[in-house]
Length: 177
Length: 404
Image (cartoon, rainbow over all chains, first blue to last red; front, side):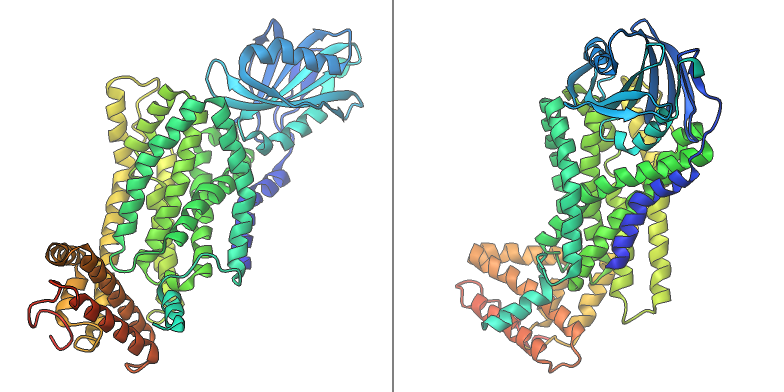
């Protein structure tokens, strides 16, 4: 019986341990000049860049998981207010049945900047697919808003959030980007 | 009949699932309990997102799953598996294996992406992770069921039945997830998903893969007295490898004749052809394997009861009936017409106990073993009770001991 338990644990969780051991920066950084720069980890690659809600966006993808980074523009308030703007101006427009976590979590990035983080689930209005995501909102030292979107199919975000947090924490913001 | 006799009969052939003294039982309960939290949360989300689509998904999948479950159940010719254990196998597949597989596939998928890059991972991750992760995790459920009720997995066919039911549970929940998350979750998307994943390909998937894995478990655990471990492990490994390979082929881009999306008109018919190319060879193999396993069961029954013919438990004519499910059913139908439903039910019970007689005969050391004597006497008492029903008594020399 112990063998069965061992096999269940290795099969279910072993992949995360192996992938964590193989995790390392890979490829060139993905940047929005002068605002933000993110170094993809192995297994992630740059995807299509563009404009969302008239703001520049760059993406890094790993199959079902995506990290989208938006340069929000000048923000007069703080990261908490920026997080609220993201919900009102972006998420409500694009997702049906939107549910947002009630609590904002403060996180400190490697550069020492304090960000605010929340999670959400909803139905993509275009594809009809159920998605879940995590938003990390932060202001650069120059007062520019930067929003990191971690996105995955519903139920799958937990499988990529380790990589997402690592890449977001190591992001270069402001003049360092 | 004495209470002790009843208990021994129950132990003999209908092991309960609730066995608190078995550590495997608690491991099963723990894993299913933990994973059910995630599984129910996911289903709640789907239900809230699209109540109509979610309900339609379950209705359609019940229409598919029930007949499949009945067919699988009836494949076992003589010793039908106890319903509680089959329900446990289904729940393991539907709740524990699906939830753990989602975690395992994600973890090993990350590893594939890190090693080979995202582009390769996008094409090959499903083929390189799911066949191993999912078949192993479903197989663990079958092993746990064996550890909970060892007497119940005593043949290759038993393993197939538990495996196929476990695979059916997995397939149904996986299909709900696909209908809701991939096909959009609205009724039109659910119907499209039902066509693609059930009508076009419902014969080929997890029921067959896990049926083969179950057969492998059956070989390893049931032939201890007739084959060395090495001679059991090789065919078991072969069947498991075949299941994983078939799953790999299904998930891989190889032999992929699927029309490009979006589908319309004849594309839906061509989907049936495309899935058959990938799945039909495995279906044919499993059909042959199941036929061979059923023949093996028939031979086992004949060998086990050959020495019993003419004693109290079974006659030559009864054995001839017992060996053929078709003749058994015909005899019960004839009994119903001749003497009513009560007599037919009693004959059914006699036939079941004569199969149990075969099980006892194959397990005890000698012909005078008390358990064997008890079972013979029980069969004889059922026969006498049957004969006491007006119209049920057979023509002279037709049945009964001494009719060799």
